[in-house]
Picture 1: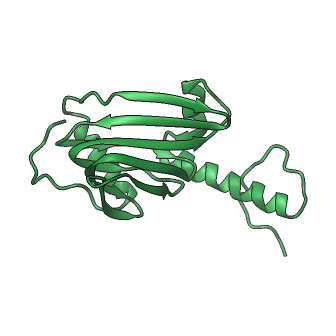
Picture 2: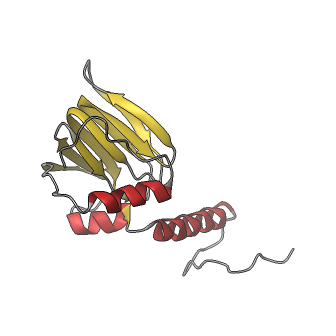
Amino acid sequence: MPIEQDIALPGPSRDTILAFQNHLAQFEQRECPLKHTFAPGTYIREILLPADTLIVGKIHKHAHGNIVVRGRCTVVTEFGRKTVDATNGPVTFVSEAGAKRALYVHEETVWITIHQTNLTDLAAIEREIIAPTYEELDAFMARECERLVAESRGEPCPGLRLQSEPAAL
């Protein structure tokens, strides 16, 4: 959606980003061309973000690499706010697991994300790397923590399930 420069991005919290996304849904959406590339064990997603656009992304289950090839945008996640400026060259960084970004694109931006997966079907990749809601993200993260604890103890982890009560000592 094209906007005026004085429109404010949300604050860095899950609730404000979701409210911002719901607000933006009422406006006409802009096309952001995508390019998909695969290498063994890796999915690379490149997106062209038009200047003067507000964008809210999806919730990522895993930490992943980012390369902003060119452009400049302000990014808000629940972890904070920053300006990514690739006007003088590419910027690389790692996004935290759980990242959902709200962006204002100051200048046309090319943004690449790099995800670890052996899948090549885009729908299957989305199911693997994206959580549809924060509730699903939290459940996924709890299962992952439980799995890692079991692995560190050398225990099998069949049929992972969340414990509703703390274990007795």
